[in-house]
Structure formats: structure tokens, C-alpha cells
Image 1 (tube, helix red, strand yellow):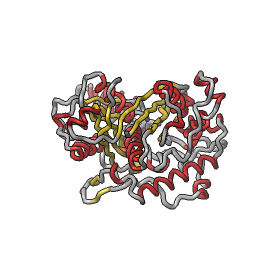
Image 2 (cartoon, rainbow, N blue to C red; image 1 turned 90 degrees about the vertical axis):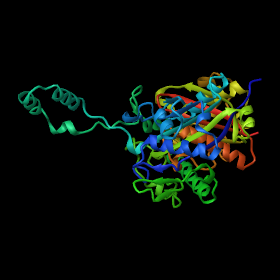
Image 3 (cartoon, rainbow, N blue to C red; image 1 turned 30 degrees about the vertical axis):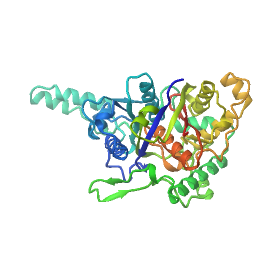
Image 4 (cartoon, rainbow, N blue to C red; image 1 turned 180 degrees about the horizontal axis):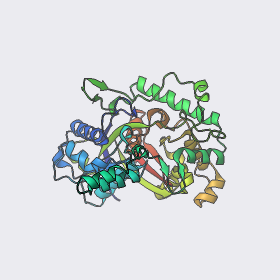
Length: 426
């Protein structure tokens, strides 16, 4: 029997709305801050770390292999290697999976895994014509050539190409894929808004009751660092169904149901966890948050990418022999309310099981009282590269706080994928 991989500790920044209080912090700054905090909280020395693996999606051009930048900025020795992974929205979970595999194979003993994203500072691209202009200008010799090239300049060269969170495989942005699922599974606007209201209410309660305090590291804010951000700033304590119902649809003006209110918030944030074998934790006198039971990854049709969790969960259940009813708590990343509700319906459908999963019976009912009990990304936000790590961290802390044992976390992935992980506390 293989030895369990322990998640010894974890911590995250507050998740804050993009272009808000953390807009002056780049993704590597957020990641470095949280890695340094993780080391400080555990007492582990940087020299004890064998590798750092970090997820990041909107990779800044000035910080290629951002994990290496994070490792050095956080104070890890130059001898500690670092790897950046990008599985879109599941990047932070993929980092954990890769770290666990490396430990299992004996390549590493102690790994820091996590994710970071500054959606305030996503890269913008210059137009190709402007790039060609600058290239030609740089090659000129003498003032006559330079003047000739300068005469070709046009003001519209300066209009940036703003990247969209869209899928080149199906030509749809993520919100449009949520509309696809809302139509396929007949999920009404009211259902989505009601789900979103519950997410907001649960997140506000979690903040007010201090349920998330231990997992969040207060972060000093630039430029003066005299103000400290303590909590997530996305949850709205005054949210109502009426207010949600008044919002315009964002992706389909005529027939759509997805709005800014029932979709995940665009967010900045970072999260990290410390991984090692159970025996190593005991050797170091560390009490783990919990253990990784197993994980699974699945591919799906890109235009239905939101169903990724259903496919990944199906593979995970087959690998572990578990059933949905065995899990005490479940976290499914709330990319969109419609997407999560579609996964819930898919898991409960015999027809979906037979036609899509190749099994005879439905995966089972997802108890909504076990799902995202502290709110989800609709309220807390979704910093793409960090969300997978945040789900695992929140799940383990909530299991411990409620004296429960078995948890499931899953995310959909742009491009048509899903990832899921089973964790246990005892």
C-alpha cells in the first residue's frame, strides 16, 4: 500500500477584485508573499524545499516561468528548482497533483505547490502592424531611412489588442460556454441568481464568523504598505435577488441568462500548500491539514467545458471506488452558476451517465448543503491560476472545522477539461 501524501499546511492571500486594492501587485509579488508566509507559518527552512511548482494562466511576459521568480523572491535558495504549470482554471490544482506525483516517485521529499494570478495586470498585446513598424524603425540606418519609416506610422497602431478569456478551439468565450450549458440543461436565470445569492450569503457568513481567517494571510498594500487587506473583498453583504434580477445579461443580449452577478468575479490572489509524505511530516513533528486520496483529469468538448467536473469526478470515483454520497463536503469552482448547476444535474442523470460517461447509472445526487458551504467563486472570486489551490485549502480546513473526513474538489477548465481531487483529514 502506497504511503499517503500529506498536505501539511496552506495559506492564501485575500482574494480581491481586479483593478482594486491589489492592482499594484504583480502575480509574482503575490506568489512570493504567500510562499514566504507559508514558510514562516510552518517553520520549514527554504533549504528543506526540494521544488516549487506554481500554477499561472495569464503569464506575464516579464516573468516567464513565474514560479522561478516567485521562488527566488520568496527567499528560497537558488538551488531550489521551480516549475510553472498552466492547465487554465485548474492550474493551482495541477500544481498540487504534480507535486504529489513527484513525491510519490521519490524525486522530491518536500514540495511547495500553489497558484497565483493578477488579473489586474493581464498582458495586452500590440498590433502586428505596430510591431512591424517598430521592427522596421529599429533596422533603419541614417535619418532618411528613419524618416521614411516614421511617415508610415498611423495612430490606430496604438490601439492594443486586449486578450479575451476565450477558447480558440470552439470560438466561444467562457461566458458563452456557460450559456450553452444553461440551454442544454434548461437552467433558468432565476435558478442561477438563487444559486449566486446563496454563494454570496455563505461567503459573507464565513467572513463574519471568521471561518476563513486562518487560511488568509493579511497583506500590506502598495505603494505605501501602510494599509493591510485582511479579507476577501468580493462578497456582498447586501446582495438581493431583486438586484441580481436587474442585471443585464453579459454574453447573449437577446436570449442569455448569464450576468456579472451569477458569474465568477475577476480577481487577484495567490495560494500555496506544503506537500510531503505522511512519514516525513511525522519526522518533522508537523500535523497535516489532511491527505490526498487520489485525483483525476478528463477531457471534454470545448464548447461544453463547464461539464469538466462531471467527467473528472466520474474518473475519480472509478479510481477510488468511492461514491458521491461518501463525501462529507464538496467544492466545485463556481466559474458560472449555470456551469455548477449543469454539473449537479449531469451527475444525477442516468441518461448523461449512459450517453456521456459510458456507465449504467448516474454518479449520484450532489447534496447542495454539502456544496461550497463557505461560498464560491461567484462571491469570493476566481484568480485563475490560484483557484484550484484555494479550493483544496478551504476544503481541508472546513472538513477539520466541522469534524468531517472526506472531501471532493473539482474545477472546469477552459479548452474542454475537468480536474477533481479527493482529500481526507483522518
